[in-house]
Length: 278
Image 1 (cartoon, rainbow, N blue to C red):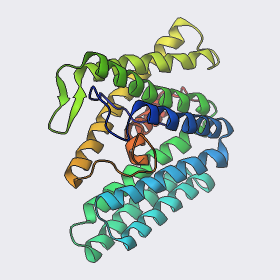
Image 2 (cartoon, one colour; image 1 turned 60 degrees about the vertical axis):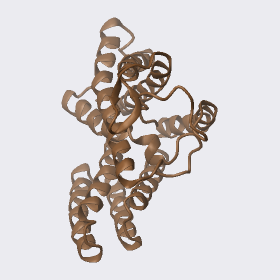
Image 3 (cartoon, rainbow, N blue to C red; image 1 turned 120 degrees about the vertical axis):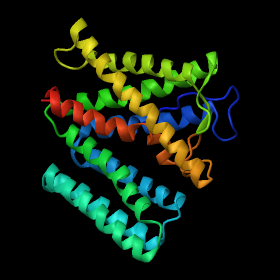
């Protein structure tokens, strides 16, 4: 799992160099792909661990109280469990209703935190439910892989394109190191990476299949880039450099999954509406 780093400064910041990023990826990549291959509880366990850590990071970054954090974690865990044992509709109702009730609770307990509480629960919960639902489809393993490859391709291509070309800034007020060249390179990288899924997706090893997957990747990469910018804006507003320190070279889990958050939701929407995941 990865978020899109649209571009990076010519020199790496301490603790976030390429070597640390690669070493972290070497550990995380087999873990993610192995859980995806197994599906079921291993995949659900990985997704659950990631989003529960994310909400803890969100709570710390936006200074939500400990009791609010625990309520949010309970709602997220309940929604994930209901997705496994119940239905997608029931889990969405629990997530949305729980987020609303948690916001009301937070308003009473910590004035001014209601919006951050609701947003955090939805920010973490929606992509988690999307990834669980998508993996549960008959061809879900391939569909999830396309989403992941799109985000990874955008990340990797943007990193190197941004370093090599530089140029005008994408959103200097939010994240001054990100460039338009990195963003464009990210879109191309996402299309190329997603097209690789045609090699293993039954019936897609042909020009039409490759084009379909590349076309899916482009909007996924766009929202992945936007997700990175949104998280950068949140960190700037909170006055923090990273969402956490658990992942060397990346910061927190939220830093690593910022691009996957919107891409997972959009990907589930695309495959649900087209029926391409079975």
